[in-house]
Image (cartoon, rainbow, N blue to C red; front, top):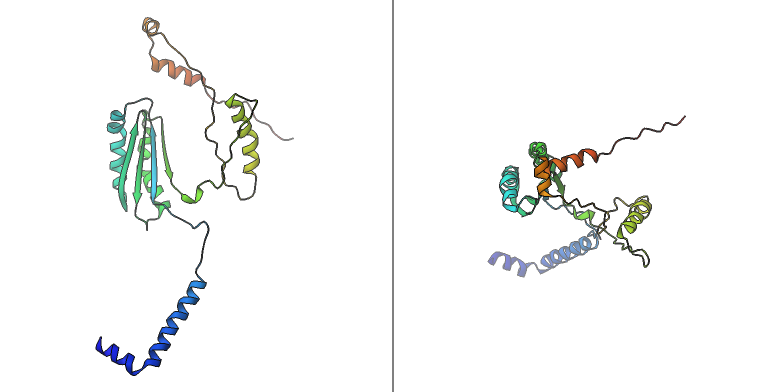
Amino acid sequence: MKKLTQFSVNYPVTILMIVLGVILLGYISFDKLGVDLFPDLNSPRIFIEVKSGERPPEEMEKQFVENIEALAIRQSDVLQVSSVTRVGTAQITVEYAWNKDMDEAFLDLQKALNSLTQNADIDDIRITQHDPNTAPVMLIAVSHNEIIDMNEIRKVAENYIRNELIRLEGVAEVELSGQEESEIIIETDPYRLEAQGLTMDEISNRIQNFNRNVSGGRISEM
């Protein structure tokens, strides 16, 4: 420390040139510093959503969540695994290290959970990667003073507005939310079901078998 002080006293011009050089270098670097309105962010999180009928949270936790958490925590560079369980659904969040390649992590986790897709008790299992860059840049609300049926407004938004927006250059995806869809509620008599030897699962399977999308043919250009 004494030598540095002695050098500064003996050579003040040299010290001044060094200080001015550092200030000039900082000014040039600051002027060329890049600024991005929407910087490319990489959030190291992968979400797993599991749906299974109307099972209670305790049963969802024991049958599915614990197994998924055990498989996820074994993946490389995993820092934390958390879950939220509700009736018939569960969401598991897998958090990775910031330097982890998320595309590779997504494929590895998808392979690890591939066996669960064959489980007949699981209605749907979805693995998604949170990407902050895909956040919506525009929100559009649709309403009509005369149309009260929300299903009709949904059809207009889905068949016309969405189709026009998706064709615009630079638009990657257009999603609908808050829409209402028509549903049919079937009420059963438990005494008549027991008399006929039927169960709710059998009725549900019968309805699902009849509710299929079948190809009506094809159109060929002559």
